[in-house]
Each structure stands twice: as structure tokens, then as C-alpha cells.
Image (cartoon, rainbow, N blue to C red):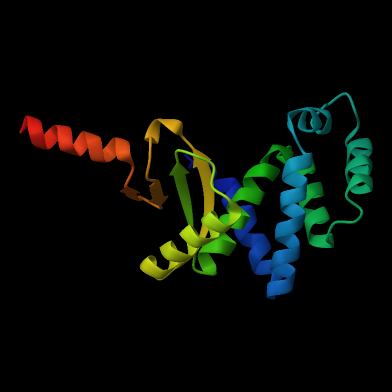
Length: 176
């Protein structure tokens, strides 16, 4: 039995291998990100509609993607013909993850009680990169329940310096 997402990952890996140089890898990444945003559930339903001939669906798809790289257009036609066009968002996500991993970039989720300014975000990312020795690509989330501090998740590692966590720790110490 195939693992969830394994088909999307295989297509993404094949595209990266096909790309070769860094500029092409980035061009494919940008193209896949655009397509993942554009190919939503309604588009997928139309492209999978058996009442419309495969030739018409293929023509519509190639016409709509005429400005995308040739390899990406070929992949889309292959996915359409194999009734796998719904994999496009997964392929885009896996592609970005693989490219980032190969470049040594770690994803981080940073949760704060308030929205940080761009300069505060940049400074926090710089500090994390300095302490971890890795390049960090961060996403920021606001959770007012934290009260203060921050919670940082890099991979499986969580650093919780929030006021809520500190209060919970103090309560455990007082109870013990």
C-alpha cells in the first residue's frame, strides 16, 4: 500500500532531477506554486469531467498554461491523462520541501501573542539562525493565549518561552 503523498513526492523528485541547474529548479518552483494556487477543487472537477473529451480538456489545459515551462506543461498533460491532476498542489508542496531541504533550509513555525513587525520578525529569524546554525524559513502565527514570549517549532523540536508555559511550569513546581 502506498504511503499518503508518495505519488506527489515521486513526481516532485523527478522534476527536480529533470531541472538540473539552480535557475531551472527555481523556475519550476515558481511555476508549481502558481499552478497550485490556480488549480483548486472546481478546476480539478472540470479537468476530470468525463463528459468533456480528453482532447478538449488537454487543449484547455495547455492553452491556460502556455507561459509555464515546457517540463511543467508536459507533467500537467501526463497528470491529466492519468486522471491524477489533483496531485498538483501536493507536487508543489513536496517540490518546495525537497528544494529547501537540499539547500539546508529548515522550516520554523513561530507563534507569538501579538503580530510582530517585519523588522522584529527578521531579527527573531536571525537569532534563530545564529543559535541553530541553520538557514530558517519561518511562518508566523498569532495566538493571544500565549500572553507573552513565543513558541518556536523547528521540525520536531519545540522551544516554548511563552508566559503561559512559564506559568504552567511554576504551577507544577509549586504543586510538587
